[in-house]
Amino acid sequence: MISLLHRPDSYTVTTDDANTNDVALRFENTPSGLDFFVSAQTSHIKFITLRWRCPIREEVSVLCDAWERSYGNLGFSALDPERALPWYFALRHQNGTDCIGVGVQPNAFVHFTVDCEGITAYCDLRAGTVGVDLAGRELLVATFMNAEYPETTSTFDALCDFCRKMSPNPLLPKEKVYGGNNWYYAYGKSSYEEIISDAKLQAALAEGLENRPFMVIDDGWQPKPCQGPWEANERYGDMKRVADEFKAMGIRPGIWIRPLCDDSPEIPNEWRFQNYTNRLDPSHPAVLSHLSALVKKIVGWGYELIKHDFSAFDIFGAWGFQRRSYFTSGEWKFYDSTKTSAEIYKTFLKTLLDATDGKAYILGCNCVSHLTAGLCHINRTGDDTSGTDWERTRKMGVNTLAFRLCQNNAFYMVDADCAGFIKGRIPFSLNRRWVELLAKSGTPLFISAPNGVFDEEEFSVMQSLYKIASKQENVAIPLDFTYNNTPARWMIDGKLYDFDWWNES
Image 1 (tube, helix red, strand yellow):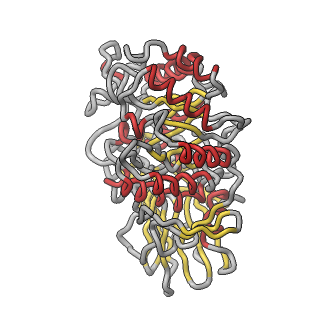
Image 2: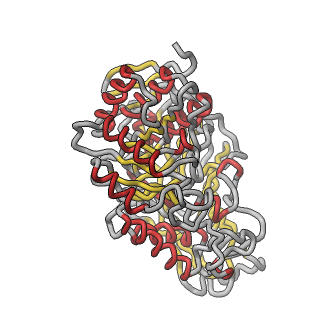
Image 3: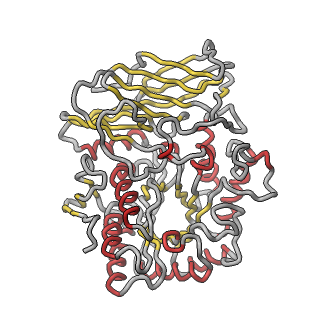
């Protein structure tokens, strides 16, 4: 077995000024794994690289996670020493599966590389792109973990178990979450009248179901597209009235925000990043107070689910697929350089969560995955699907569901994104397969559909799938995910399903 549960064989430390004399590393074995600590008095630490020598002399295939969302790019591959493996990975071989990673909510961005001579862990402790000033405090960087599973345990079951080990205390909704989201048919062009009609469709699809669906109002309710200020535009009028009318129909209100993007002139410039003047710096205490007040206002309107978006992009300046190794680059820093980027990001998430006072669920989108576990109830684990492009839905949706399903109810509820219904665009026969898999996967099902888009037969099909989605009791396993990045063969509650993702009929 490959083990990281001992002091690494070598390490390197990188600081802003190349001085490492006052940097102290400490390792401690615990029941969870190997805790790694670092302290420094004056040095500003940027990176720490840890190396374990453990020769790999057999044929293996490697699966890793993603920094934030995945982009239709997850799958097993050959050993590639240059490939960055964020957070955790699995080595599949003839004798079973080995899983290696760090526990959720580390205080650094951690990725691995694997070669035939060993494993290297790269710990990014920067505050932005400058070294963190620990000022004498000792920081728990991460807890390294690994587990060995015999060939009698399927690789999928091994991943599910390891995710539970990395995340023993997930934050989960009290009820199963499902329903509607208007983005993938409206694409930001919506109104009070249209969203009320959308909610009526959700009520009809969920008629008679005890667990009531959500209707999530996506981007387009605020004055400016895809940014604040977070007040209703003239098409919506009063967001509290919308929430009240949803509830009167038996629909749970949800709403989308992009909390860190707001160019309102009343927001002081010192709250903003110097390199992105419309984006707020979450390390600034006043910004955290501002965000807390925003969430409290929305909860006060009556919204029971808040979907917050773009946080990884707005802070770190890139999408996950653009980062080959370290998650951020360039020259920029936070207002507060005494905490690592990971610490700052977690404080941002906790601020949003705490402001709900337990009255609303948090759905993260474009969130840093391993830092999100335990701080969001639900996480959008893949890039956008589509209401117009079936190939995009197939690529993004099926891939993320298959390869991040092991995180469902271990890290958070896994949201693999919507099925979008627009008349004359994606054939219902294809979208139906995607909805059926989502409904029977044990994960949340969201659809984007205007009232009247379904004929009588289609409506009946959707009603039956909503009934399943309202309970999320099914157990789904992608059987061909070790060799197919768009898995088509699934075992659901002991029954074999073959999903044709390619042909309309």
